[in-house]
Length: 98
Length: 224
Image: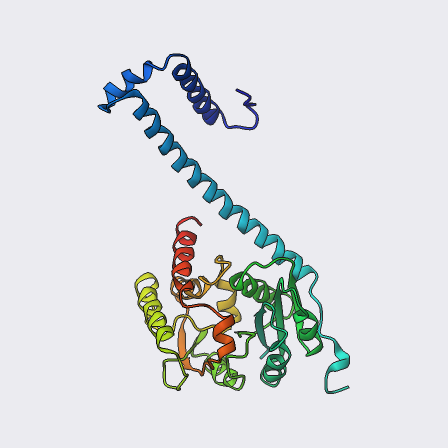
């Protein structure tokens, strides 16, 4: 667990801490999942692990999707600002008046 | 009245110079936003007498329009902004008709429509999809317009300042209408011609793209 509290908000730090502790427990004592399985009414412990991971993946994909949209917008903003700053005036010599 | 045309262009060497020469007599200034073209679009546009703003990387037509509008308002003090396509599918002389309602103070936005009266040679499949777009817009923005995805429009400075385009790519057409509805801007539709050539059909939006545009529109709206 290499989380530095400064990079994560406290709430998320606790969430991930608990999450990895849970992962640790499941790795060391796989049979604990059976308890959760029975509590949730799902057949086997392995199934619980699969369901949880799918949910987690969905959530992470969603987060990445949001992040990508915000990065996209930032890039657009920078591109637009650069374009305006480096705007070029029309070239005069080719105009018909001259 | 300072009328400024905003023309997003992506790899338009073939048409850009002609398009600028065509519209020049009808506007005060033309701005071409070169949306990361890999060809000489920017240079040709400049030589034809347009201001050129260059997106270093391609950001899409919506983003290009936004860039051009900001420049037109801030740096050129535009009174009226025209959105115009770089591929030459519009009729330059129709700019005069498009700006009229704005000059007369009858509207803040004049939207070009190819279905209002003139006979654009709209291919059948394209027509079907455009009609679907119109129904879609009626549901999402409540505006009753006859042609929602026409790139030819005129906006007063007030309207241009109010309208905020966040859809980088093609969904900006619906977004502009949403913004018109949201800010309760007075709008009129003006009949315009859209020329469909084989080339413009190949390079322009494929009809299948409409699905993606709807997706972009919805996700963009949900996650602002």
